[in-house]
Image (cartoon, rainbow, N blue to C red; front, side, top):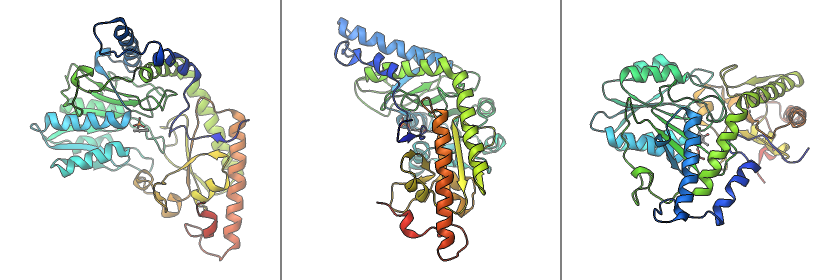
Length: 405
Ligand SMILES: *Cc1c(COP(=O)(O)O)cnc(C)c1O
C-alpha cells in the first residue's frame, strides 16, 4: 500500500497513464493550431480535436457538432446559463435551480439576479433529492431555463433527471444539467434525459485539468446561446480562444476509457464503498449516512461521526486524504451549503466526512481507512469525554486538537 491514501476522487482524479500517453505527441510533435487552415500542422491538430469531439459526443448520445470545448465545467456552466439568459432574456426573466448546486451554477444565478433576472432556488429533501413536482410548480410563463445537476459532488445524490427533463420539454423550458460528477461514472444520455445543455469536465474522469465541454442541443429544440468570450470565433463562434489540443485529446481518451469499463467499475466501486460503510458501522457507534441510501454515485460515501469535528478527524489521520463538507477557504470552516440544504443538525453538519473512491482505490486501502477512521474517532471521542463534560457536539473537541498548523 502507498501512502498517503487518496480518497477524494470527487475533488479531482489523477490522469490515467494511458491518457498521458495519448496526449504526449500533441505537445511538441503534432503541435499545430487547429485553426490554421492552410497547412498540415493545422489539419493534423484539427483531426485530433475532431476525434475527441466525436468520442465525447458518442459517450453522451449527442452529435459531434453539438459538443463545444471549454476550460472546465465551471466555464461550461457559466456559458450555458449566462448564454441562455442573454439569448432568451426577451422571452422571459426567470430561472429555476436547486439549493445543492455547485457554486459554478449558484453564483452564476446570483449574478444574473443582480442583473434583474429572477431565480427560484428549489429545496431538497433530507437525502438531497429534488421533487420533480416542485420543478413543475416553479415553472411559469417567464421561465427560460431549469438548471439541475445530474449528481451531487458532496453527498452523491442522483437527481431524477429523466423526469425533470420530460417536465421541461412538456413546458417548453430549456434544461441544463451540470454533469461533472456523472459523465463517465454513470450512464448519461442527452436524448433519453431530454437534456438541452450539459456541462462536464476532464479532470473528474482521469483526464487533465483545465479542459471541459458543453453540449448544446441543435434540434428540437435548437438552443441559441450568446457567447461569453469574444475573439477569434473558435468553436463555431461560441467560445473563442485557441484550443487546448493536448488537453482535448486527453479528455477524449479519458472518457473513452471510462465508458469502456463503466459497468464493471460501477459494480467494483459500489462494492468497495459498501464495505467501507459496513466496516465503519460495525466498528463505531453513532455513525450516520448522509445523502440517499440508494440513489447515489457508486463511489461516494458521506458519513457523520457523532461527537467529533470533521476537521479534527482529518488532522488526526493525515495519511488519508478525504474531505469534510466544509468550505476550507477561511480559517473557521463553515459547513457547506449542500449539507445545510439537507437540514442536518448543527452537530451532524460539523462531523461529516466525504469519502470519494476511484479507479485506483484498492480493497486494502478501504480496510486501512476503515480501521484508521474508527481508531481516530474513538480517540477523539475519548478526548472530548475526558475534557469538561459537555453535550457532545461542535465544541466538545478541545480547541487545540481542531486547530490548524
Ligand atoms: C468539479 C465540479 C465543477 C467544476 O468543474 P471544473 O472543471 O473544475 O471547473 C462543477 N460542478 C461540479 C458538480 C463539479 O463536481
